[in-house]
Image 1: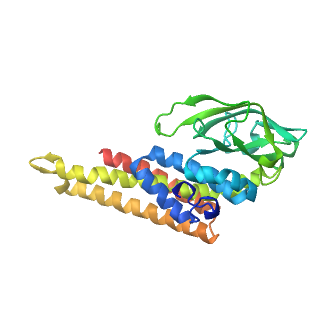
Image 2: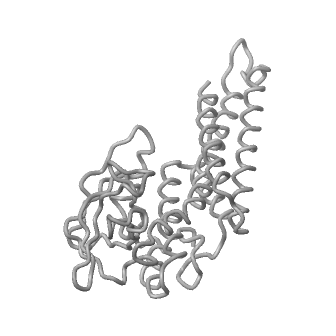
Length: 288
């Protein structure tokens, strides 16, 4: 269903593409940006990565509960000293007998306080730099795993963010996502898709701004007439509408390119930058 929109139907997903995923994020964000953010973290950062890289047995074990909503998904990469610089992460995964033992923490994890299944990146070999990072599928019930704190934020408070702690968390070998030492490959290969999909959020916010502003200009009166009759207000609304559609066209084009396997990293980054900045400006315009 919707929670596994790009996942294989065999495991409860909808088998749809990234353009459909963008539209879903957009419409959910139009109603609530917080829910849209949590939805994107669940359906793309977690579910889509498992769908792309997991073995058949891993998919069978984890995807049905994620796609049905029984479990919430999250991705845990960021740390207090390592955000975009993934090579600097300090969460350690050491091999001991037939499993890995994880020690360390993750910070600012969207859905972290609620997630039942997480894709987690850890260092398995610090000496190999980018080739020493491995992706794991972690369950919240693993002994030693805990949420240290639910973090407060300036906005998006309906989307829970937390600090995760790993204290001698034992993870079976079969929970490695892809292969040992190839976590950066898993991470970077999904980054363009994540940027394009999450760019749907700002588009939804822009639509929500118009949903509020347009009825208001017909209700609010100054000098004996609705402010929507003033040319300055009409011009501002026209600019907002054109800006929203320009951003939507860019994001949709990049998402369609993702579906064709033709997207470029600069456009994936460009569309989310453009959409986010324009959404911020439109929110200010809507307040005006």
